[in-house]
Image (cartoon, rainbow, N blue to C red; front, top):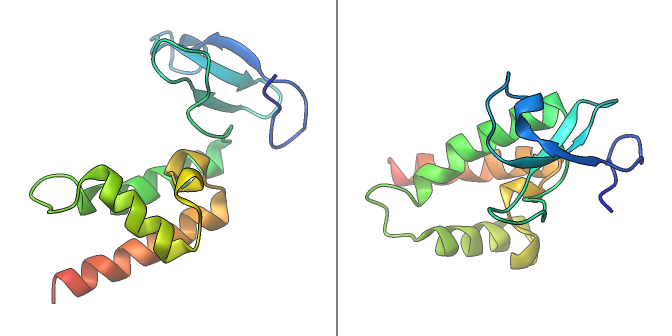
Length: 123
């Protein structure tokens, strides 16, 4: 059972079309009351992270926007290496270091760390 991080009630497994204006991207765990949801790993019912409300979804988008360029494109980092680096920088275990698992404060810390690393890289 997946519980909503906001109200503590059980989330329901539904088709993502419910939140994406009729377009389905597969199943999600959804709390209607809190308008919080999380997608599932492909082909499973396993959540990709934690349920996120509008504010947390916004912070996750920003965190991805500053973190992903560190490993995408012409970077010498692989995605795994980038997450290992981020885990060390954030003082978290690797298995808990993923934007999908972060709360708002962790997203902000990720954003700050990645922006600082990007500035160093560009100087």
